[in-house]
Image 1 (cartoon, rainbow, N blue to C red):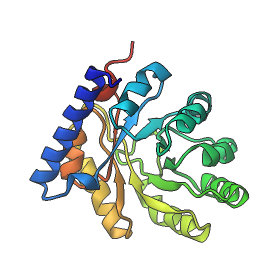
Image 2: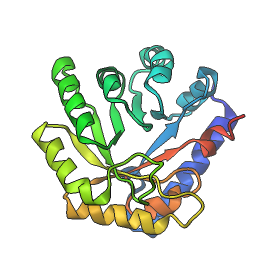
Image 3: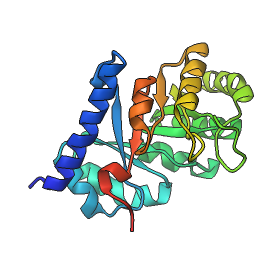
Length: 222
């Protein structure tokens, strides 16, 4: 049975995405909604699956390992995205678990992922995370280091799907989204993983191909 509140939340977010896409002259289907299910129990995730959601995001490899193999076996067609930081020593497990990795941010991780992909035969889409606000406490490569990191990805045959960013909190996100889009055009990559519950409509208007939405779909975590 479809949980009415889950269905309503998804419909509200999808309608907002469609509205923002229309303003920007884009097709809503060009935007993938990633439901960020970190810390959410399986009981909270299943209603969203029943309501038609297929892409989910987790922050940690261990939590994904505990929750998702059984869910994916029970619900074919789900795609799992790693949206949190990845330690190089967890690269192989991440490659086995995830269909997309949104936090590739350093050369050592490029090397680890390259080895893991060669060993497992799996090649999840990878987004290079850019520290768009130059914040020392956040992951992501420096803007100046992006060209070299993309070169290393191509040398290692990493499937680069695009760029990812998390703008600084409590400031207008749009200029940072616009900058990420500019960097993507400059470096000839197409995907843009940007926008969360508070700002995903702005991200869609500025070209986001993937928005990572948690609170608007699951409610505030207790």
